Image (cartoon, rainbow, N blue to C red):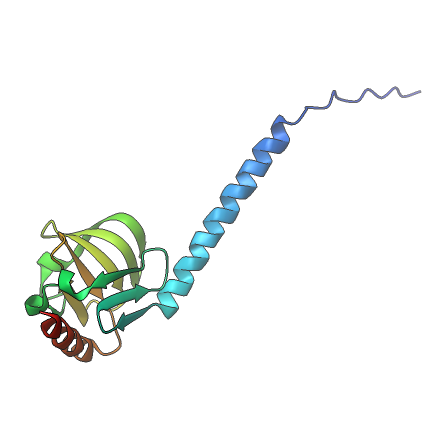
Length: 153
């Protein structure tokens, strides 16, 4: 004859632990989803009064009076090592995609939406940081930004 003895139930602590892990995993998956969407569908809107960066959690609106219009230009980061992203502060750094706040080799703080390092738009601001973007038409974006920033000044 076999006698069976059951374990004393553990209580709720293991359930709360697994619930916490599940919430953490859901949060990580949501952040990864936002990164994937941002890397494919981010856009940069040059409006009448501001530059709007849209795509993921790092998006923002920067009024034209905060941009240094004379220094906006197309850059090739292979030829300008001082503007290369050196370290990530808060953001995403994947092969072929960088978004968020980075420190550049020259020490400057920069907000990046970067997929093509050979034809990026460098946008210095008057607020102690720069913006590096990878639009489809970098020359067109630079021309439009310069025109709109100059028109506000």
